[in-house]
Structure formats: C-alpha cells, structure tokens
Image 1 (tube, rainbow, N blue to C red):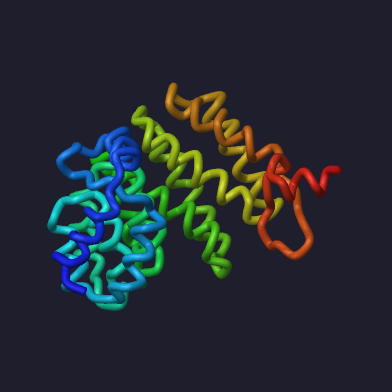
Image 2 (tube, one colour):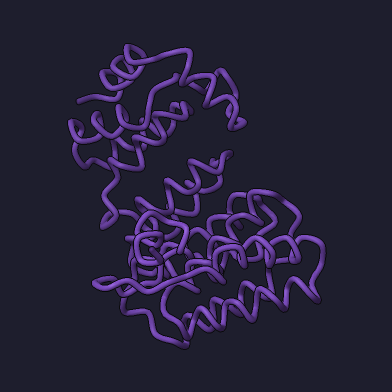
Length: 239
C-alpha cells in the first residue's frame, strides 16, 4: 500500500465521534481524521513493515497516520537518534504512550532514552521516560534489582513536576515497579510515603495516587507480578 492509499482509507473510515475524541486530547482539528484505534491497527496489518512508508505517514502530520506509522515501523531499522526525532513531534499523551509501548520499548538500548529524557523540559519527552520505565517494569522479566532500584531513584529525583501528563506517568511507573514482587511493593510504598510526607505539591500528589494501588496488591497463582485487589481477578482471590 502507498501512503496516499492508506490516507484515502483512513478518511473513508472517518467519523465525527472519533474526531471529537481526538480533538479533546489537544490535537488540532486540522491534524485529526477521526478513526478508531482498532481500524488503525487493521490498516497497519495490511501495510506491513516499511520504514519509508512509515515516515511518509508520519510526515503527513495527521494524528491517526502517526499512530499507524508507529505500527508500520521496523524497530530493527530505527536508530535511537531517529526515535528522538520522532518524539520531538509528539503533542499528545496517547501518541507518546503508543510510540513508547509499541515501538521504543522494543528497541535495543531504550534504557538510554530513559536516562536522557527523565529530566526533559518537554512535557511528552519526560512523560516518555516514565512510560518506558513502566513498560520495562511490566514486560522485562529479566530486569535486575539494581536497575529497578535505579528507576526508583530516577522517580525520586525527577518527580517534582506539576504537569498533569508527567505526574500521571511518574505515578504509573512507581506502581508498576511495585507490582514486580512483594520486595518492590515495599520499596515503592516507602518511596510513595516519602514523596507524600516530604515532597513538593506534585510529589505529594504522585505519592497519594500511587499508594491507592500499591497498598492494595495481592499475589495470584500463575502470575509472577502482583495485581490490584480491586481488579476482577483480585476480587476473586479476596472472595
């Protein structure tokens, strides 16, 4: 498929309902087509892996075309420098998280991006650092304790940030580290209380938000990670 063919299909799938949802995220109306994520994923499967095509889609500036571009990109042919260039264009939390969870976390050396971005002045670049941290805590089963401890230290050092989309990603990273096992639940709870009791206004918010879940985790058979007691599976364990 060519980029023009894909754009034509996206526009054919457009709906005012989805367009309104995209605009609510802060995406300019002129950059929104209005297509569901499910339809974007279906188109990505038809398009296959093609970085040239992905860049053509990305450079259209359309939000949905960029979501699709992430799914079309081949991580093995993308450099960390190119990944940084993509991040410069991100202007919404959903594209940030989509880029991190579907592409960047799968790249060799993504840890360098966490280190480089965790104190960024750019909202979505900094959010990306902690989205990657959360994703690593969830999916990287081989993460060593010293790496997790370092991520907790990065949270401690870089959590004084009033921006909503940054605060939420920091809380998310802290909660996901806490779900690794009971040792890291304890470490994460201690850090959350430290932020709540001694931190800035934003750090107090992060600590309070994280504790809602961190203090309510349970272990279930067949899963290595802890889960929320308020989840469906968690409720079944408690009952």
